[in-house]
Image 1 (cartoon, one colour):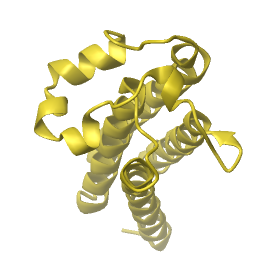
Image 2: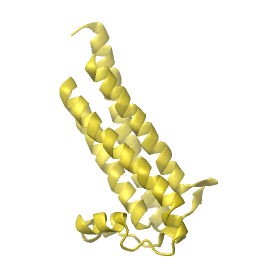
Image 3: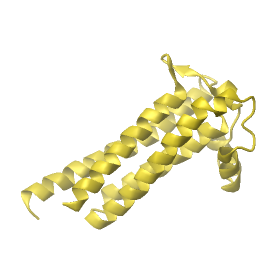
Image 4: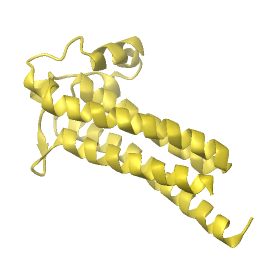
Length: 166
């Protein structure tokens, strides 16, 4: 292994670890918002929590499994999840938040089919309608905070894919 490839591997590992921590931190922040500040989640909120946790898991696996091929595969999966997260945040803000009910939406059906409402209700059970869950944090819609982190995750995954090809 050359010095250049060793430093790029170290940089990629740090990037993946930072991404995993940011994703888990975002879910922790959402849980504090819910359980301390009574900002109840809708189905789209809880779906985004799941996506963040999955991205974080793939990023953590990438820090542990240092094979470039495996990292590319994990980063591709993470990129796909980040794009899904971006789409869900945009949908939540521009479509779902305008409806009185988000019952039986795609997010609700995914979460029900995965049985996460029953397994971890304090994390994944929606407690509000999409319109009620459309709140701001520091003047910015909560969905846009998610969109921003999903976008950063997508960019980070593209960087991991690029570096792992070298």
